[in-house]
Length: 128
Image (cartoon, rainbow, N blue to C red):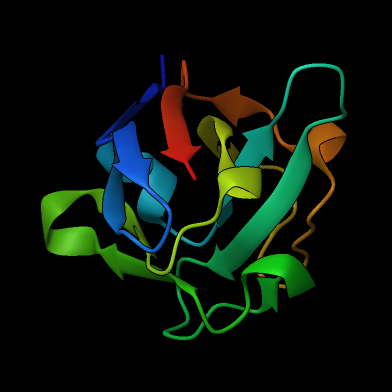
């Protein structure tokens, strides 16, 4: 069974940085769509950034994180990262990584409902 797990959450002050890691079994990183998501209590889970594992550059960043967060892959380590800089209090939430494994080589999405493999989440808290 394919599993994903997030690491690296914590508490920081506004303006600080964190790097999240998502570790998964090797098959996840073969020609799938993967991404990072965030959920704030009382709000819907939202897609933050997604990438095809067979491409170098992410194909989606939500506007609120552009220029501050960077998604990257290290397939040799079976790991996806989310580097988060200049964090803001509104970035507080539970962060998840996920994979969309049924889309083939050319379909990716930022819609959480379309992703079928999820990690357990890691909490990020940004204080002002």
